[in-house]
Image (tube, rainbow over all chains, first blue to last red; front, top):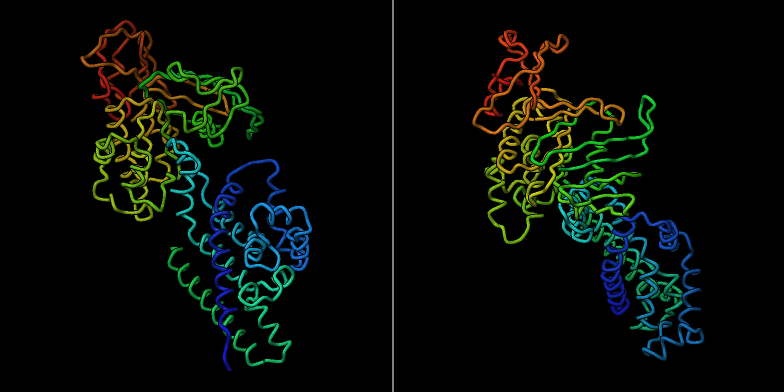
Length: 221
Length: 282
């Protein structure tokens, strides 16, 4: 039984790129949420958390409408940067960024909020800016939270199904990620292939979590 | 001169509803802020540091306005030249002792960090993380770190609270030495009378957010010795100390020999060098 490795590589690539980009977006966002007393903060927090409670098909449906070339946004993207976000890998990345955002932001925000306020205040009284305080003092002291954010985001993106199905479809090499491939193979009654993909995902997920708990134990002393 | 005039709404246990403090601190002095728990001592330090904002008032330090409600001035902590030693020391656990001290060190003065390390006796622990230090060592690191920017005002929040007698004494010696060396205007919050007596030249008692008493333990007299006449002498039964007031100073001692003095006597006043057992030798 020859296995097509493409869906596995595609899944890992999607999860890797999403995690990297979300780390860059999530750290400033989580820091801002943790330290600011902005009045509209609850609004921003609610928006970020929406993907946690909405069915993936709802998120996927609205993204499908937004990304479609017949919508204003989709048409604009296509015309100005020649980018089509439905049925494309780029579209999956953008959708995953929105969908996995809370999995990156929440742990980091909670990690930062749990640090003693006096560390931040001490840094301020030493003349240091909030950004330098975050980079030099706060983030290095919540490594477990950062790690948790990275892993949850990666694992959650690996497990995406409904969202990918809605806006990505099932294009080999483009949007046919492992979870879609499993569904597809079962539909075709190729249980052996489905089983191989499923076992691989299971093994990868377990290995990642094992690694994280192992590392986290050493970091949080 | 440091002028402090701050009002902050706050509920105190006995019913007072605001912290309302007006004091002036001489530059170079070491003032102790004492009073019962919850009397607003730490809050006052935080107001001075810019970590909390008063409802109204004005804070000026040597002419520079740090806070003025009417002028709309409120400098952030970063722009106030302060050193703050937090009660929990607030050392950064990810940095070694040396990195903690050097964290905010201004560029171009490499000798400054070394001078502070030597002054606080921290050489043996430089590469340790704060988690592996004793309470007294941590306070000394916090003190060195707070002084690294050469602040105009040093604020110490209960630095002796969690220390045993030996560590406390050691920290006092470091504090006195650094204070004499650098003459940083210092405001020290403390519960312990012994610490206050050994260190401060002025004691302000805060009760329910208001200054209840404000007394000088002895003015900072330059050597050589000064001669002053006694204006008033009395024995404080409660505290069992002799209290002598001259034109410029208020002195106290448990020394029974003080009973021979009377109003009008001329006495020689020595500086901190002759201070013993919380009093002065005359």
